[in-house]
Structure formats: structure tokens, C-alpha cells
Amino acid sequence: MKENIDHLFETLVLSIFIYGVPVHGASNSDLIFIQHFLDKCHKGHFTSQPVSIFNLLEQQDRAINNHMPAWYYNSQRKTNRISFLLEKVSPSSDKTREMQENFCK
Image 1 (tube, helix red, strand yellow):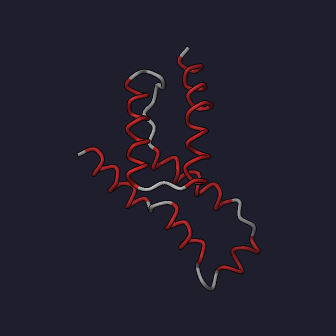
Image 2 (cartoon, one colour; image 1 turned 180 degrees about the vertical axis):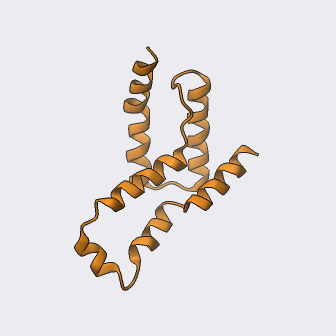
Image 3 (cartoon, rainbow, N blue to C red; image 1 turned 60 degrees about the horizontal axis):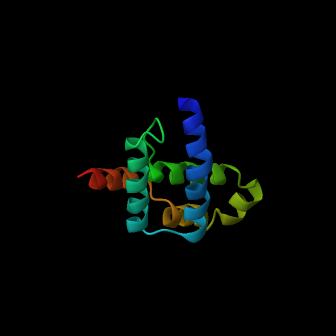
């Protein structure tokens, strides 16, 4: 039963956030609002594990980054644009940790 609920939550809720947030963009206040929603889902037993929107976005950015072709890396190496773009889209793990700590206060 718990596996079915987790599967439904992942397919119906998380898939929308994983796709929608990077496509439409989100400010820090938007991400905190989404995190509140995810925390309420966990408290309401709609998922068995707590979910962090910050970690989800970082995982997705890293997955996309891993699938970039080698020619793209070679063409962008001089300007280091990939790390610049990822910095703008996804905060570093230090910033993620800081946001989570500030969120929990």
C-alpha cells in the first residue's frame, strides 16, 4: 500500500514540479511555498518519505548536465558557461543547505 501511494505521489505531484519549476522558473519564495506544500503532503501521509524541492532540482540539473554532449563541453570550456548557467538555475549544495537551514528556522 505504501509503495502504491509513493508511486502515485511521484507520478502525479513530483513529476509536475520536476518539469514545471525549471521550465517556468521559480523564485526562492516560490520554492519555499512548494516546499511547504511537500511538507504538508508528508505530514498528511500522502508520501512515506519527506521530499525536498531543492534536492530534486539539483538532482535534475545534474542529470541534465551529465547528458550534455562532449562537443558542447569543449565549445563552452573557455567561457565556463555551463557552470554559470547551472548556478543561475540551481543553487550550489552549500546554498541549498543554507536555504534549507533558513527554511527550518
